[in-house]
Length: 275
Image 1 (spheres, rainbow, N blue to C red):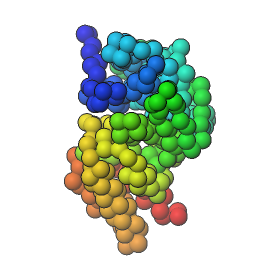
Image 2: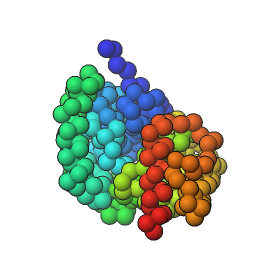
Image 3: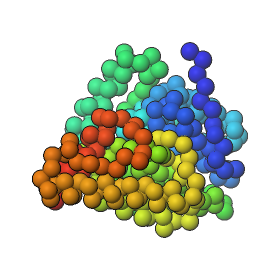
C-alpha cells in the first residue's frame, strides 16, 4: 500500500494531520532551532511518515515528542521517535503503569498487527519525562506551554503555542463530533473546566484529537455548551431515576461511534450517581 501522511499547514510554525489515517490526529510546532511533535498516531508506519515529513517541511531536528494522553491512537507510533525525548504529564505515566491498562495494552500490541497490516511495529512504551501541572519549553524568543488539565482522561494535557495562538487540545475536542468521554479515568467536572481554561488563553486556533482544525473561540463555546447540556441531562436523568440508555442527550454533533457515545453516557451517569 502506498501510504501518504501529508502535513496540513495551520500557521507558519504549526502543522497537523487531521485526515484520520493515523486514527488520532498528530501535529507539530517548529521553534527556532528544533521541532516539537505532538502525538504519534496509532501506527508505526504513519508515525515514520509523519516524522519524515516534519523533518523535510521544517528542516529542523525533532527534539521532543509530547503526548496529550495515553490512548493507543495517540501513542502506539512511539517507535518512530525512539531517539527523541518523549514527554507527558506524570499522571499519564501513572495511567500507563496501572496493572489493568498495562495488561490490556500489552495484549493490544501483540494482537493488533494480526488484525491490521498497518499495525506492524506498534509499541506500548512509557514517556521519558513527566511533568506536573505545567511545563514550558523555550527556544530563544519562542516557547510552548504544556498544561495538565485532565478531563478526557486523568492524565490529559494540552499544548499551547502563544506565538501563533494555537492550542493542541488532544481528545478534549472531537471536532463537530459527539465526543468520547467514557474513559475510566475521565472526570466530567474537569472535562468542562478544561474548556473554561482553554477559553482563558489567548488562542484562536484549536487542533483536536479527532476531526478538522477549529477556528475562533466561538468553536469552544459550542463544545462547552454541548458539554454542559450533556452534564445537565445526565444529572436530571439520575434525579428522575431514568436509566442511562433512556437519557436524552444533545444530538447536534455527528456520532463518532455509537459504542463510545453509550460509554460516555454510562460513565458520566455512574460518576454523578456515586458523587
